[in-house]
Image (cartoon, rainbow, N blue to C red; front, side):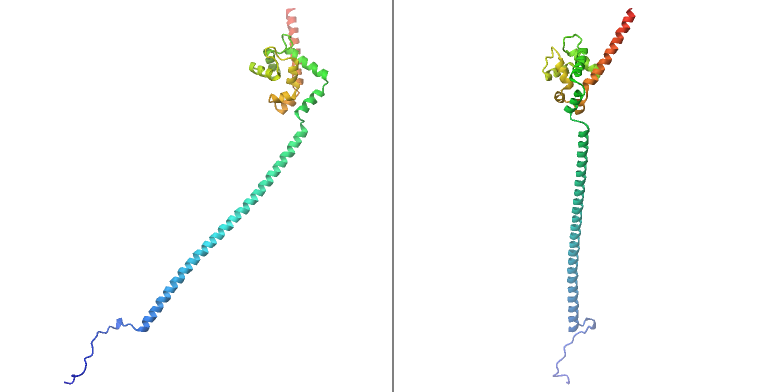
Length: 232
C-alpha cells in the first residue's frame, strides 16, 4: 500500500511537567553556585566576626589588666606615702619623748645629784637600819622580805632573795650589806640587769622608801607612847 517504504517514527510519551531545557539547567546551576558562594561568605564572615569579638575581648582584658596595674601602682604609692608619714610621726614622737624623759642613768644621776652625797648616805642608812632588826649590818631573808612588804606592798620570796644575793655577789646566808642595798636603789646598770623598765630605773625609789620609813618610825613612836601611857 501507500505506507510501504516509509519508516515508522519512534513513539514516546511526552510529559509537559518533566521537560528540562538546557538554559534552565544552566540557570539552576548558577543559582546553586551563588547560594554556595553566599554560604561560604557567611561562614567566613561568621569566623571573622568571632575572631573580631575574640580580639575585642582580648583588648578589653588587656585594658582591664592595665587599669588594675595602674590602680595597684597608685595604691602602692599611697601606701608608701602613708608608711613614710607614719614613720615620720613616730620619729617625731620618739624624739619629743626622748627630750622630755632623760635616759635612765641620767635620771638616776639627777635624782642623786639633787641631793648631796651626805644626805643620800643618811637616807640609805636610815632605810637599811630600819629593817635590820638584829642590828648585824645585813638584811637576812626575813628582813629583806619585810623591807619589800612595807615599801612595795608585796613580800619577797626566799628564792627571790637568794637570786638577788647571787646577782649582787652577796652571801645569802649572811645577807645584804648597805653597799648591796645601795646598788638596789641607785645603780642603774644593776637595775637594768634585773629587768626593770626605764621608768622604774628612773624612779626615785630611795626617796619614796625613805618617806615610808620616816612615817613608819613616827607610827612606831606613837604606839610606844601609847603603851607607856597605858602601863603608867
